[in-house]
Amino acid sequence: MVAPLVMMGLSLASSVVEGLASSPSSPPNGASGTKDATRKTADDFETMFLENSMDRLTQNIGQEGPLGDNGTGGSVYKSMMSKEYAKSIVKSGGIGISDQIYAQMLKLQEGGAGGTSGTR
Image (cartoon, rainbow, N blue to C red; front, side):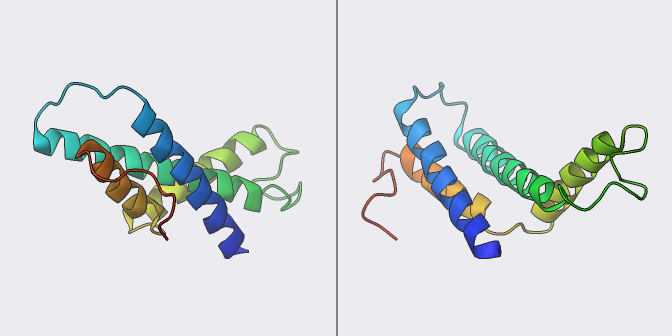
């Protein structure tokens, strides 16, 4: 189950990286500021990916219990739980998507060989 999710994330990540390559770059604000912003963007993407994955995993856990949809705001709490789990996973090292996106974004910013075609 994890492998298809990772493959989906990697193909989605390559789309994001290619989209960043074609978009106009913002004015540089120093090397460390740019790298910090790039790292945050990569971490935010991994958080979003994991949050969506967690939502899918908890989608069919049932209607009863403290996070069931039959209670007041159950779906809201379930969504919040998924978001916090995703943040926690990324904070503790993540699953590697962030590191790959960060490396590709740095290559694109430095004018190196961008994109993912032909390499694996």
